[in-house]
Image 1: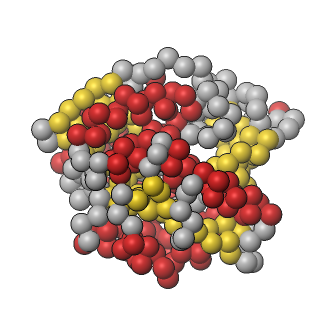
Image 2: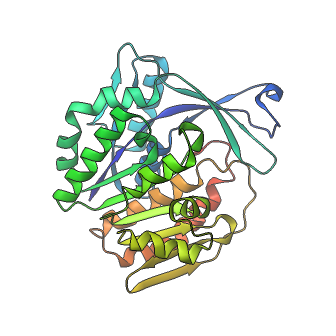
Image 3: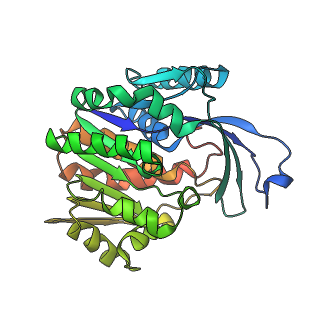
Length: 299
């Protein structure tokens, strides 16, 4: 089964040493980036089938991204380079704990909307599952596009996987972000979020209670990742706890993307058979642990 992933591809320019602020950065190295594009690539690397619905600017960086997506085996039937737009570039710095900070320039979400807008419902119909995150829920245009695609996927009986992956700096307030996310829980085959996101969305600080709240809101399966402490899976008649994997932390940017991408590959290989989530959870945790040891999200 091929999963359609809706969202952005961007260029990450990473300072490959810990710094307190961008003012201390002396050089940057180009890496592939964009949370949804990372998920599509991670899925393809794990043997799954993924298509990316989105776009970039029709410029040298857009070509750079498209070449790398193609080389990774991501289906680009719904990905387009848009003239007149600038491919988004993020200057990324990380602190001593591996936590990143981003300064983004260019037309990221705008390129996604312009590239795929009129064709998105056709793309949903042509694929077997649908994945999205919250970055396409912030602005009015992309939100309408995303919610229409989600609704069509549910109408068609396609599995919907939702990773809030909240970047709160993009929102007017945490409450606004949580409110939009709550509207996307009902009917989702899988909702994956980290512990902080689960607490914000549900108001429950304890992961077990937060997972229960996400299920009560209509998600069929819930995974809450807990960083170095692993992850928990909860669903009606299914539960699994997986401990964390010790790993040196360089940059945490791509950990969640690697986690979700591997699970999408496992689910796609089994026609989204629910026990595949439990079977693949430990490998997903290990994949996330490997990702934090890289300066780039994927390399």
